[in-house]
Structures are given as C-alpha cells and as structure tokens.
Length: 97
Image (cartoon, rainbow, N blue to C red; front, side):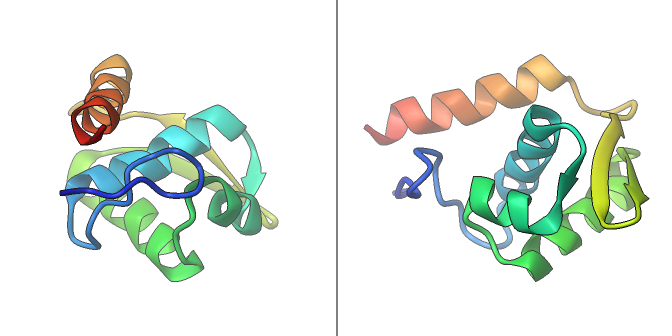
C-alpha cells in the first residue's frame, strides 16, 4: 500500500519509477524552480530529486536544464507521454484511497 504525502501525492518507495515521475510532474508544474522548491513540492530529499532528474535523462531521454540554481523541464523525451504520466500518478492516488 502506498501512503499519501503531506502534499496529497503518493509517497512511493525510493526505487519506484513513479517517484521519478512525481519529480518530473513537479518540475513541469513549477516551471523554473530551485531545488528547495522541489523538495517542498514533492516531500522528497534533495539527493533523491537530483538522482531522479539524472536517471530520467539517462534512461528516458528527458531534458532538464540547470541555470544558476534553478532547474527547468525542457522536454519529456521520446519515451514519456506527459498526460500518461500524470494519469498514472492520479490513478495511484485514487487506488490508495
């Protein structure tokens, strides 16, 4: 069973791919954002967020740019469908209720 975080999103286990998706959705929602904003939005540690961003680029072709201290999601890459990722996360919340 997946518990919901303070932000109302599921708190997926560390190695669950949906945790990486949650980071991407937060980046998309916030636009250009600092790491601390992503921590506040997701409830995940800075290191987990950095690891998720790195893995999403290396494994899925996601493009995230860093300008000074801000990160911005440029492209979901060739493997991910933004609407599909959001739907998966919403369904995870629904099935947890």
